[in-house]
Length: 100
Ligand SMILES: Nc1ncnc2c1ncn2[C@@H]1O[C@H](COP(=O)(O)OP(=O)(O)O)[C@@H](O)[C@H]1O
Ligand SMILES: [Mg+2]
Image 1 (cartoon, rainbow, N blue to C red):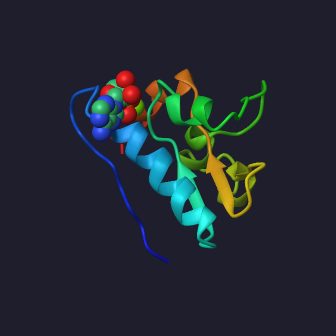
Image 2: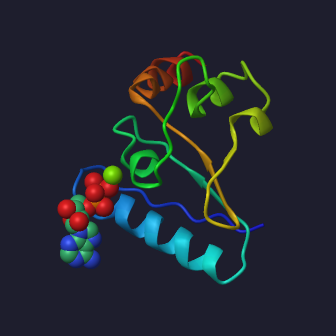
């Protein structure tokens, strides 16, 4: 398994666009791709057309180990594409992780 991260301190640098296009490209080429949306703005989740329903686990619940990782992974309609989604609650991950 290979991991690709798109990181930058400021917004508007192209992280979401690169993640979305690279993920779709690799999935189209037959690679199984797990997208992990680690931004509380949840733009990647939105662009991928995933609607986080109330009480459905997101990356926050996976990070806090409230659910098994597998329970936070959702298959998307496109072949080979899976998502651990974010929503605005992911802001809380910062305090959780800082508290150790
Ligand atoms: N290669 C590019 N060329 C021109 N505009 C781009 C490019 N990549 C992203 N953008 C635009 O820049 C803006 C910010 O991109 P986005 O991927 O949302 O950044 P981030 O996730 O880092 O905040 C968006 O309006 C996007 O359409
Ligand atoms: Mg973004």
